[in-house]
Amino acid sequence: MTLSDCIDVALANNLDLQALEIEKRLAALDRKIAFGNFLPDIGLRFSFSGTDRPQLRETGGGPIQLSDQEVAQMAIELQQPVFLPQAWYLYDMRLKGEDIRDLVQQRTRQLISLQATALYFASLALEEAQGYLQVAANSAEALLKETKAFEREGLVMPSQRREVETLLLESRLSLKNMKRVSTEYRANLLEVMGLSPFADLELKTEMPFAPAVVRDLGEDILEALTNRLELHIDDRTLEIRRQEIRNSIAAFLPRIFGIGSFSYSSDSFLKYSSVWTYGVSTVLTVFDGFQNVFGYRAAREREKAAFIEREQTCMMIMLEVLRARNRAEQASDQLQVAEMNAATAEESFREASARWEEGLLQLSEILQAVKNRDQARFIVTVARYQQQVALATLADVLGRTGKGP
Image (cartoon, rainbow, N blue to C red; front, top):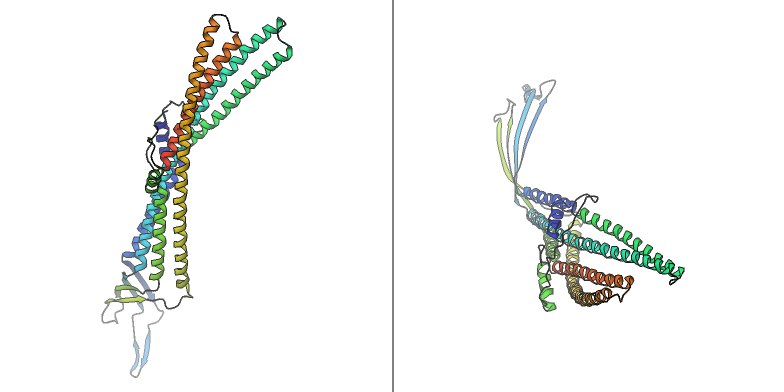
């Protein structure tokens, strides 16, 4: 898989994103529930009652039956909000809450892409490290054979041979430990991709991030403050807190409903068996133990806290931009130094090869030249991977979406 493949699979299978998708649907349902406050409330009521004896009332002319012994009643009741400002504020808060869930999901997708990128290049670097350590172990084996031959000729002391044996053992242990670390990083990458940590995965090298044009720090900070989703989330949160203040003020206002009903009764003693009823109902809270007053004060404090959190996010983003720029510049400088060292090691290897062909070098010396060349190549490769991670981090800090630069 290339880096693009890994990111695509991670965004499709990651369990955190699936959980956030459920939360996003729940936020949409909360908004729809809040919208229900604007719709009429319609209810159907039915009752049946009977007595063991007819209901009679004594009058001057004798007892008079007042109603049937068995009576069935049915009513359809309707209540329509006419003036309910709290419902508008609640709906608006639920709408902004849905926006926050969507922004959180988008930001999580960006962070998962960045995490997959870091693990992808770390896995590649560890693969390169295994190759380098394998070359070092092979050089140590060849050096041990040469040392044993010199020992048989009496040119090397046994203690020197033991030192070479220790060097070979250390090289093999380093290679074994590097394989363990590489397996762990590969498992972490598979887990981020939503796959089994024990699955087989072969990575294909991809370098999608090119060094960006160096700009003024203020331009990068402005871009980050404009694009970063964390600030958009804090903006929605601050708007919700302000709506909570308005909602707490609306708690002091009356709530007005239009009411209407149609009722029917089977009582034959009634002149009109069906009746229409209509009117207006108003509810005004006069005293609720100062709950509305304290609720308003609490809403004001929550608005202040949201504003402070937004300012903290701004400061954090500006600091992240500075750090990411420094890391990207440092990675570029390290890559430049590594490439110069690699060129020097390559030239030294060519010189050593020429002397080896003339018989002027021993086996251990030419192997050391090979080791130095491979080590320099390894350092260049790792430096390139580190630069890619630094550039990806900078792109994420600046709020640039997508997988490329």
